[in-house]
Image (tube, rainbow, N blue to C red; front, side):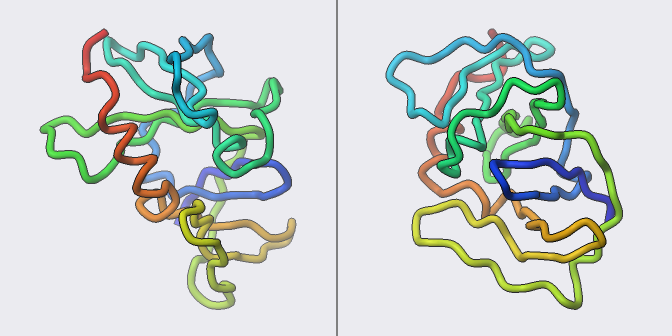
Length: 155
């Protein structure tokens, strides 16, 4: 399977590219008053208001660094009842590589505390270790509910 790789703190992650709608540059985000720290803000993408999750803050790794390789990964959020699924942005660093990954075989199980993001199984390649993210398990239920409750498709 082809996967988009990125980094959160010291963790390398990979996301199946079939879940990625688009990767866009880090843009100016509109903060939402009273929002949780992991919500980096909102921006308008092709006429739709898109909430952006700072994955670094969500995982307790501080704020996403302002590197040139920091990007917003646009993905549809499953579990919505709308004809058009809710689109969310994932703010991550070092988003620059698409690579072939082999999820079967020597994967180590996923380790995570309750109510914390599930990074997925740990895989090993020639560069080191990385987590194969399953977005449906990665974002805690409370985070998904809040994201689905944010503004609809128009600005």
